Image (tube, rainbow, N blue to C red; front, side):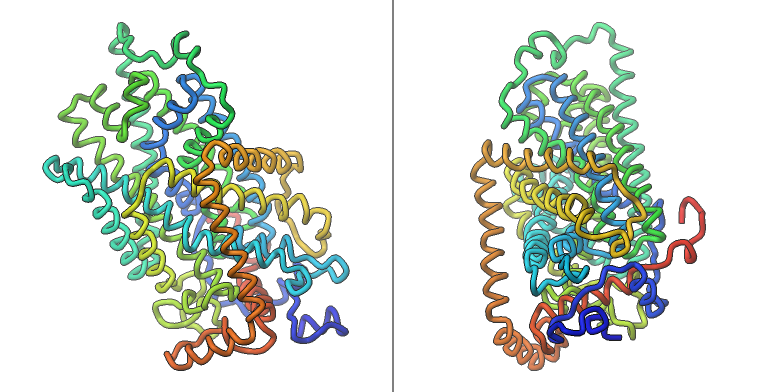
Length: 560
């Protein structure tokens, strides 16, 4: 069926328009019978918890306290950053339910900013802003954000693993080497078995929640058994007087706390594999972060009540220092590293799973070579002829690329600069996705063109956009080097995108010849109509493969 000609018979046939009508999408799902959605609500919550509860809660409390000056202000930062995350979750629930495909912001930006109001369709050729922003998101996530995040988590894993063997901890590079080894081991696990990797995720999610509960209980029990204990002064009047009044400091402190919460949008990256997304996505993205917020407030309260401010501020392993106080050095030297190892192991596992899907989804939309969307059985994930479904095929090439980049970041991983650099870019795209996907699309995309099974209260989206934009502005002002590097990277991406489009035909022919010589089938450089035509074709195919009629297909079981 030629959807373009049906909608606009007078338009240039070389440009493929993407229809957003829910009716058209449902008619197309007859070709998607082999697409198995394998992520249940429980596993979806586990993916959110899995990446959220990682290295952040064991690395961020110190930088937060240093920036704001007092325990009360630090807890306020943790509370309000958690509330900001909940606002973002509500917004992303609407976006994910409206566009239930893999890719997250890359998918939302492409549709939100490529709308042709005259034809009620997405037209990247006439509105290239959506394609540009989507391309920048893909470049940022594939080359920087996801590998950077994974490197920080893996380095914390290596740091605590090295502490189990004191003689090895004296080697400066050992934690980073161990982190790189973890990345490759988990990558091998994902390549070998998709089912096993999700099972590992479920198990470690439960263990991590138990660990946070134990830390909270140990802190309060210690205070109960030691009523005379008055070593910590993080909540004293003197500490309150040291509270910072610098807005830039609070922006950086928020970034450190939000890094610990990072993972709240994790499920949106793999919505195409979630069962009944219109129902389960809003539930998962509200339940998961709510659990994390409560757990983090209790754990940080224990940290700040037990440990002196100087210890919290200077500690690179706050959980271990906490354990030394409440458990003793002997028990703490074994118990606490094991807790952190389990937490970071699960977070790295979740990050590898979702990060590779971002790369594969971008390849499906022809934003990068579709070589990175090929599965371990050498079929594209979107291929209707594949014997493996889109939900179960493993994008092995994307996994390998991610492991190579993350291993490189492990060699230069330093916590606060990497977090600020990563967060500037991440929150810029959060801002752009909600601005375009909700505040703009509510007015430009009528309900008949974009079905929204879940609708967030509009003031929530407005507050989130203002907060996200403010965070980016104030953090760049406070840490200009990381800001210049981050947005300089985006500027380079704009140049690459422009050159790619200007030289599309020549590049297509050159790339096709290279693929033919190497024996690789790649739609990024083949076919007619240029990159815009292929982007439309592949994205429509992906969307058609992903959208199901939830009312008919799925049961009302809460855990489906």
